[in-house]
Length: 143
Image (cartoon, rainbow, N blue to C red):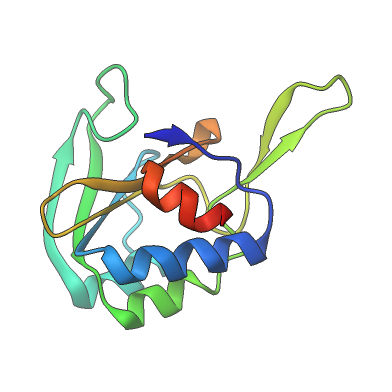
C-alpha cells in the first residue's frame, strides 16, 4: 500500500469511481463512540453484514479503545451516498510547509474498501489524515 494525498472533490469522485468497480465490502470504524444516527451509518444500514466492537483495524498501530466497526456490502446506492461528501478529509500543507489535515463533512470515521478476496484496496485513518491505496489503483487514479 502506498500513501495518497486527498486534495479535491474531483479526486474524491474519481477515486470512488475506481473503487466502485472492484469493491466487495466496505468497513467503517467509528472511533469516537457509536452514533447510529449519523448520515453515513444510516446510509450503510441497508447493506449491513456485521457490526462489532474492535480494538484494531486497518491503519491502527496500537489497539483502540473499543471502537464500533460496520462491515457492509458494497452497493451502487451506498457509493452514490459517498459521492455527496466533499471528501474523506483534505490533505493540506501549512504555512511552514508541514503536512496537515482538514476535516470535511465526512467526519472522523475511518473507512476501508476491500475486494472480493478480502484484499485492501484503499483505507483511511481519517482523524490522523492518512490514506493508503493499492499500487495498481494509484496508477489508475494518476493515469
